[in-house]
Length: 147
Image (cartoon, rainbow, N blue to C red):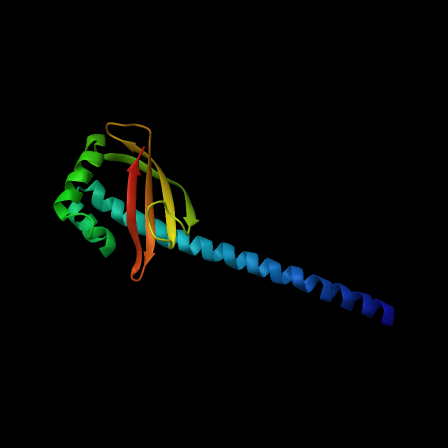
């Protein structure tokens, strides 16, 4: 009887690290999903401004460090030339997200790249990539591309 209790105690102690690892992995997966949900919502809100051609509001939603690099007029012209030729959005489907601390040409930080499969009036199969940065007041768009 004592031997059985000892064996069960040893098994329990041996499994504790595995349980701790499982809880840690589960917690990180949950945190990742929460972050992705926040970032996706911010990206979709910003894309809504672009879809409605409210480029001035999209510019205002960018981080101050990016607004300092271009005037509102330059941003509007850039978005008009990049986005308007595709026409209105017919559909947009979330594909995935990727987190990184490094972004070419930008300071190290917290970045999330969101990818959508999008169908436009003038381009039936396209991909949109929105890169957001974690700023003091939330996730803000720092780059947008249509492929």
